[in-house]
Length: 384
Image 1 (spheres, helix red, strand yellow):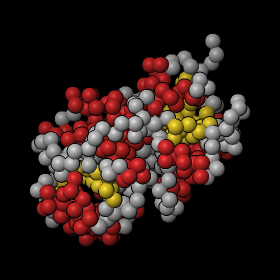
Image 2 (tube, one colour):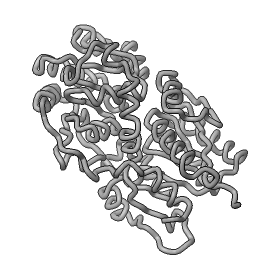
Image 3 (cartoon, one colour):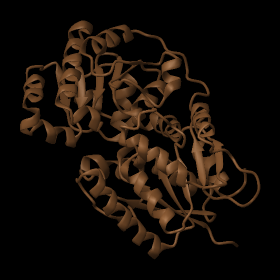
Image 4 (tube, helix red, strand yellow):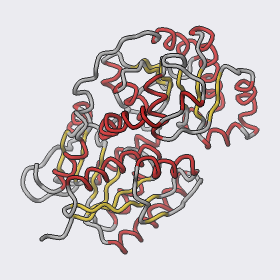
């Protein structure tokens, strides 16, 4: 029997932990003995609330390698990650390195693998916000250019790659200059559809927070472009405050530890004061994956700058207000499932009010059918 294909999967942020868990389950249930996944955790999100609970609730195996890079500037984080990932590649000798999405960990994983002459597989390839001032956009572009396998979640992402000259290459010889480019759907859809029954059975979030279905707005803010800029963050908080007045509903705001740290700093003193004057904005700790899924499923409207939460809201048929001026998930805007409000208080409040009671249709086919992980595994094995 042939040796299994050895995958080294690089994770570092919450959405990547979710996706790695989906892939791990698929391999264990359907590809055992043919694929083997090792997990390398960079430590990009190093708070226990952002990592440990995800391993526990999703059944993700303990990381095989933990770098523990912690907080630092993006260049410093990237350098530390590249060095650690390269060392892991040298020690483990994987057949390929798999990266998810658009984080610093994604960039570092792709760079280290390319420099070690190990093929790269990029899940969520081809996404573009068409704004190179965003670190995430640079990370996507570089990862795509270095990848042998580009797994696209949407038709739009396939179109983006084609416009950049990146197309599926025929024949058995593949590499960054002759890649495998496939539309596979979104692995987050696998997670939502697979974990929702578990979340409904186990989550106590609504009971703990004394919330009822459609009785609150759910908000998250974490992107550096919003949280680092005190003026933008202040505008978002003002918009959330106005949304509570216009809708009569409280806002539940799970607060990222990095944003909490910023609020404790002198640069964000006025933002902290505004937040403290708004008791209807219910700041709560970061939520685990099952609690977050339950909170999203039962929210009247979701307001977020997270790409992943935009998709979860769409899959769960929740209206969504995006706290940015653009999104890489262009199909959500085109289909009316999200409204772009940027950091404008008036637009945020108006969009939240307009979303109340909105009946969204099932997003059939938008992000696949819940078997993206299976398609990825099959393609890596050369079966499709």
